[in-house]
Image: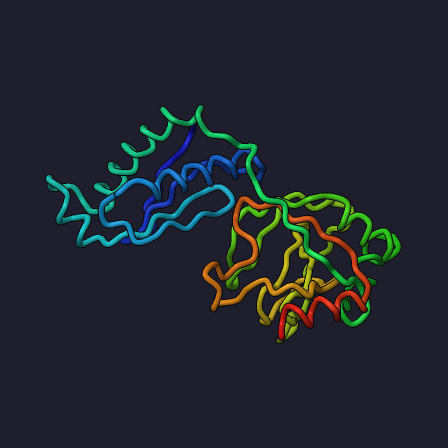
Length: 242
């Protein structure tokens, strides 16, 4: 497994595991993350996975105190990670990549729920029905969560419906909105400003801080969008938000 360790200031180290966004790199990231979380490494505060890397945040004072020589806290952390990754590589062949969840996300496309659907269709010289058909025509891998609580970064959107972000972002996008930005698609779990092109909205509650697991989807899940009518949207909303 090829990787590199990059210091990020005095309190973090990036484990770089590739440079391209693809499923193979994603599975390496997620399996190494799972292994790291099972190891009692010194001074670690948290791990933050991304498309092609894992950032390890640590307490430099604890790292320095537990190091037995005069090396810096950053070098001590890197040495600890090198040893852990070496152990991980010996177990890599045992990892099963086939287990994952597929979560169906109902979406009401267009109209008040997707005010930019027409613009996406016009930009790509197709009908709104074509855009919806293509958007729902495949499953999307959740590479990571970020930007806002529970915001899923999805891989694999069809390039035929890729559309640039809006020149002027909206000051508020309603929770549940499904958007497109460039060659990416995603779901806003909470209401927030944003510049993605909004093509629809799901009635599902994607983020609830009161739940034991506050996010509906996790990195490593697959998402399948299912088109629904406005009547179905209102019916599901009633059960989800009241």
